[in-house]
Length: 426
Ligand code: SF4
Image 1 (cartoon, protein in one colour):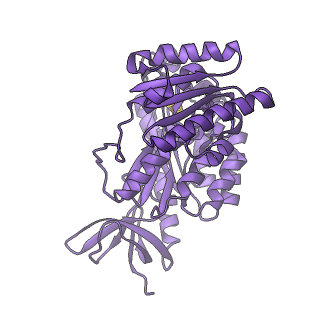
Image 2 (spheres, rainbow, N blue to C red):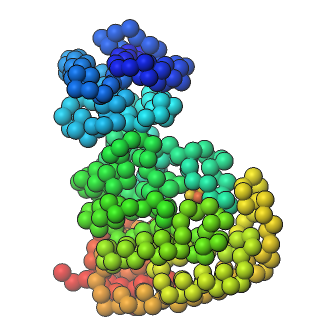
């Protein structure tokens, strides 16, 4: 790929561009003019009005070139997209990518993603899931430092994918038959933090919600420390975002939360959960917990159990603490005996099974929308909006139905894990 670049603004911009070009150099050929290049990167300044006008002029010049050579790519970085990303993309649709990070190393990584992106409409992906749902990765790595977790050591710091790249992939997945997109990352609520003002999970969900044919958007792996009111409002308002939130709290005791490095207190978690319940009716909250964290006393465990018993998550999983090398928690003695960890895990799961059964039974006689996952020998299995694939409950129907069908189902009976129903009369 041949890349031309235009640098505008102060010496700080020069240094940033030098860092960016130094990182991407092994992967591109530099061209001295946009006319001879496949892509032009305009590194902008928006310090004062005249600088903004100059940047816009350069961008419009390349936009004109693009009209003659539609395959030419126009990428914009620096202060202008950092300040006016949404306006810029709306006003100048010829722009193919707005790079909004203030960190040149991150911008370079994003450029590398764009440079390595295969051309053509289809991003190759050999899907392993059923055709009607797909996972959509929105960022890589994790910048949290939970004391028990080795993932940041393995995967590195959080890097968000560009919104336009995610939306492109989402469109492709929907065109190939996906009706449900499941957003994943190590921490989905951290999405966009390093991309600059205006780029966040709420904006991304809003963009995804506009995709025709797409029916459900599901959010996994959120972090209680990174929620805000804008995101809650957005989930409450967007019709395709299902009323299901995966919000691993891990524990509720303040001392343990602090030891775990979760950057959140019991009070903050409780406030967030109440807000979510209040603002999003019919919400199913999934959480996951760790039993037997180093030093967890019987009293601290009981506090966790009482919280679960009182709050009643609709979906819940418990892991026993695993002592992982190179983590901060590894420096602590793995003091809770294995049998104790398992006893605590089982105590919570036993109680949760009862909560689950009550929730399922509360649906008997009601009509719920179900997405059919599979069908064999006249028996079909699907999921409600409150169930993620492979993790949560199923709805069983004694009738053949095509996978991918969405239909209203009347619930006729329920047990600890599953619902039984039949197609509702219309
Ligand atoms: S537990 Fe999740 S949020 Fe915490 S460091 Fe690991 S991957 Fe990141």
